[in-house]
Length: 221
Length: 203
Image 1 (cartoon, helix red, strand yellow):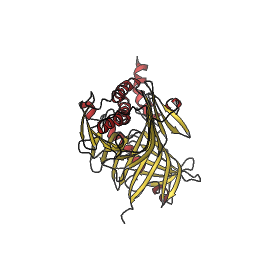
Image 2: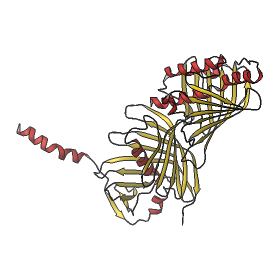
Image 3: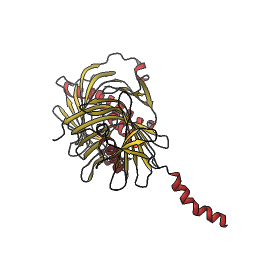
Image 4: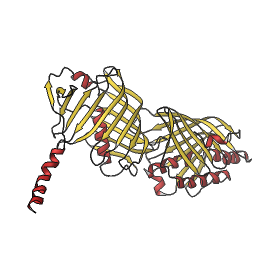
């Protein structure tokens, strides 16, 4: 009986130890900051992606994702590949759902989608800490006021792609975004292919293929 | 995702009206009935949304063969094909250079679509179980009868071309404010030309 109680008492500690958390980073100077910042579009942009999604139960499908960003404001829509609107919302100071048909009207869906969109397209607020991981990969780490972390890892490949890894305030990995087939355009490192792997209970995968990217207006000086 | 697929089918239900309406409207205009066995046409599709600064433009071609075969193919900006043949619906999307079938289409909903098509082929261009129909000159307005359908499609507007019996465009309004809509503009229509059955079974 005592041994069982001992094991029960130990369980939370074991669980917390099993969460790897963000990797340690040897802090250095932010010489690579421009590389990190270049993965985010500046100004007013409209993106159209073909999105292949896969849910944990094995189901999935393909939709069109439309994202419009300007400053901190995000607007996004999902349509069928034939063009019927499934979801449309805008998120500036507050989240406003313009259209949502089942199952895209479920509680939390809009918030989750917007969080993914922001993770992909908007630079986290604040100044990052820069450095290198144990495997010498250069990293820019943004720590938000609520304790969430975003690591940006510019890839040293010829096409200069990148990875974004986000962490919750309790150090659980929430998503990995992997960019492939990148090209440099006016200082912006645009990815033709993005894969978002969401961790946790709702671990889903989004494979996004760029159909069109258009800068509607340049950033305000 | 089931509802998502039913949305797709609703769209096709709407567009599938194209060929039968041709027959029916030709009948109304000219007091002669054109017997339509097949229709094929190119289309340009504009998607308008409240959030969009510019509409999304898609292009493709559709083929219809009486009584129940439809091929709806987008060629730009990405390649996808929806095939309907003898009650079977299949959808393919090009990924990594190959047309891959999307699984999970709700096949039984197709029966609803086919029922509609059959109705139009019989020349029944009038109110039916799904839509109220009103005609004003070259414009035909379809309004869903059922509330659940109206949440997906608020109204449909057909524009007739100058040539009797030809459709110029179909516009599907999704919201009462008419801020979100899809417009399909047809061109190069061919009627009653032979179409290989293979095109309705193979992407």
